[in-house]
Amino acid sequence: IEAVPGFVVIGMLCWIILLMWYSVRRDINKAEAMIDDIISEEESQKKSEELIKRISVKNGSKLNIIKVENLHYIQAYGDYVFLFTHEGKFLKEQTMKSFEEGLPPNFIRIHRSYIVNSEMISRIEAYGKETYTVMLKDGSTIRARATGYKLLRRRLSL
Image (cartoon, rainbow, N blue to C red; front, side):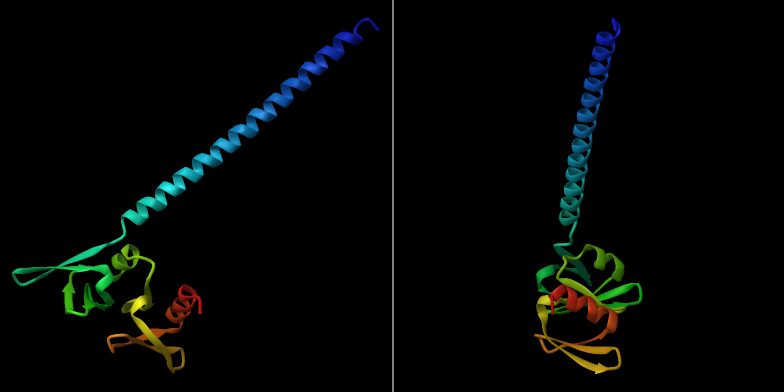
């Protein structure tokens, strides 16, 4: 009977230590989650800062600067690409993959050979089995495969 108060005191101290440990662990988890959120936000900001805003193209002795918003579509040409704008077409030594990763979200790869600016699309028509024709506002037509069409529909919320 004389030891009961000692056991109660020791039990309460253990209980308090356990509650404090749980509280500290919960705070650490919250802090880790906040750090993860901050890191992911910084990564998304870096990615948005790394987006291509303009493209320089050498044409003989001239250097043309093309703003991305003026770009209608991109067509693959081996290890090169053709950039189509209202000013004409320009040849650039760069891969489609690098453009696909660096362009803003309104540029959609609708075919192995084409990346299109979705803001330039006037209409889309079925052309054949799993093939579509994308009509642009400037009158150009581009082929789209079924996977590109599905991505286009998802991005345009159709």
